[in-house]
Image 1 (tube, rainbow, N blue to C red):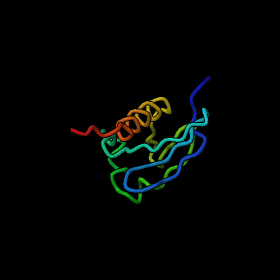
Image 2 (image 1 turned 120 degrees about the vertical axis):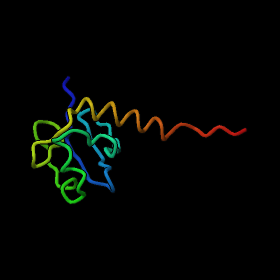
Image 3 (image 1 turned 180 degrees about the horizontal axis):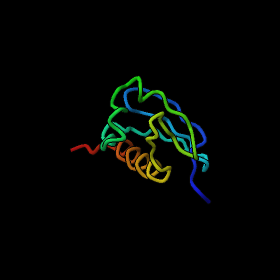
Image 4 (image 1 turned 60 degrees about the horizontal axis):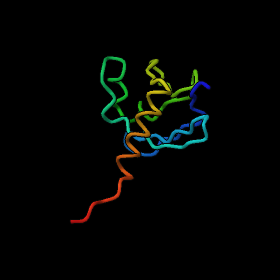
Length: 89
């Protein structure tokens, strides 16, 4: 099965909630992913918020996009990091 993004909602800052065709929903933070010439315009918050779903992933008006597989792995990693239990000493 090919991984696809079925729905995407802007949350805040550089965070987007993504619904994948697996039924999983993850919050992904792209603040550290906006590197390279095509991603520079996305640093402008108004531009960043203006995305759509095209070719099974999120895409911006300048053609910038991320592979759904990359977004899935990034989101799973970020969510794993934020959901680890705190260790008490």
